[in-house]
Length: 213
Image (tube, rainbow, N blue to C red; front, side):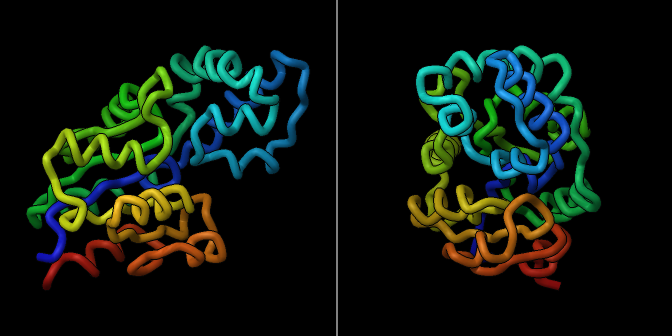
């Protein structure tokens, strides 16, 4: 087995958080009287919130806007979410095949844990990695490094799986292999521009690639 562990992004890879994230972005923008169009906000599913609000509202409002976002997200937006088809089955197969499964998400770790538990897939993960609420760990390569440090895994033992350029670029910065998923929020043009071993249309394809029949 070439890889010992798999690091999964959450949003757009394991679950579809579009409704919750975009509702909460609009909630924060509305607080400042800034109107936004739903479709134009989809590109903000993936990057750190501070980057999103810096672009939408300006750097001077980014921290406060993040607090406003979480004001709605924690009690409501977190659950405006759907798990992608075949994810539980694929995680179970990968776990049974002997892989160490972890998350490496730009979402705060405590929210990642709640979402995984909500969809009853927390049981498949050996370690839940995410950003910190204080923003000290938010960029994808920093999240990945944190998970590597906490688990004691080496970068050449791990495969990163995600749906946005941030996932693939983060893996590249950490000298890790990556797989891009095309059913999330990054399209072929975005993902193919970054180093990857393959692009997949369904998470079950990951099992076909990694598990020797």
